Image 1 (cartoon, rainbow, N blue to C red):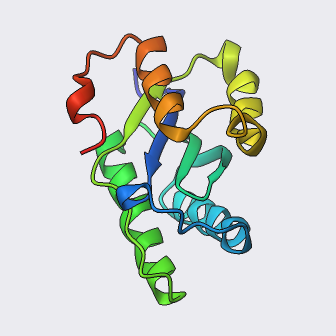
Image 2: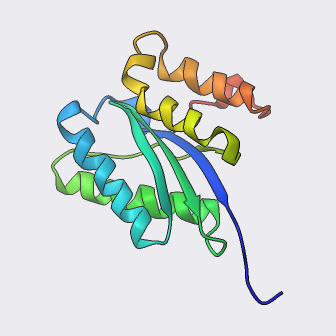
Image 3: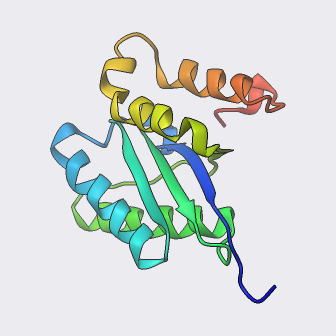
Length: 147
């Protein structure tokens, strides 16, 4: 076969360092746009980006030549640098969660990301994150999830 074909949709979630509420409403729109620009510049297709003042969700399609870990590193490093240049004193958490997404549920994940503000009126980020890990069958030790 002379061509490579792929559809690698990933739902990626990570928080601010210490889950500090540094992504105020004022900066979120610009930050999400900046994250989207980073993705485009590295060949990632963005389905949706959103979050709240202490975390972000991305639904992106990765090219076959880009590993998830490298994509997250590019996104976090470049956006952190930019947010610090905006006078934020900013840092992302060290880790992240990533879940593969089937084409049949893409729109449901987009709605989930687009409705983060309403969603978090009922549930904290910590509750949401643990719920996502459980939903996707990820083994974890609760004592170390938020280190």
